Length: 219
Ligand SMILES: [Mg+2]
Image 1 (cartoon, rainbow, N blue to C red):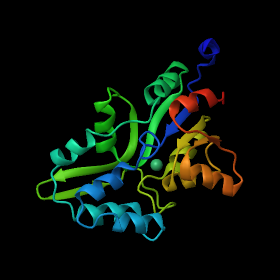
Image 2: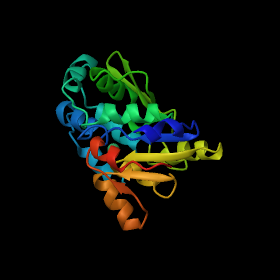
Image 3: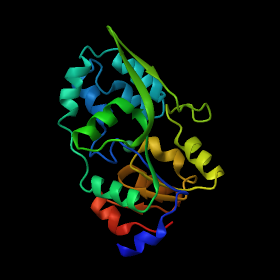
């Protein structure tokens, strides 16, 4: 990748979704299935667009009695999609600003990445606070413009674009739909790939991150 060295540009930003993108399944749904009395009941309503991420997380975690440590023992088993470390290294080598942008929780993202030796990444996501007998949440990236999401991905992307940055987005699912038509370049797997196709918005489809590396385009 020798052409890489000449292409360092701090105004290029890569935002990457977490659940279902860097991992093979949706981690928060796995926690719900494993630890919540109500299972996926609220997650399914969220998927249908009936409730917000905030309502989904708060209602579901209200039925969880497991401790943080018990949940982290489950998180410790989670694998990353092949090629994630290599992809992040490529971004750093090219001088892209890289961040994970998630409608999920910073807690489990950081925990899982650390299990795989990945630390120090910028993570834009919602917060869970473990308090005695209760879980509390805060949403630093909420924007009423996108009321169903706890982290407004298009708002964050536009903020960078207004400062002159170009933004490539990598994602997989429903919480990424609002970036379609906003991000300058989209790499998509699964549901997001189908969604882009249905909207006639160009997206580069990928399977895992080794595949994505072969399809990566200068932007
Ligand atoms: Mg996802």
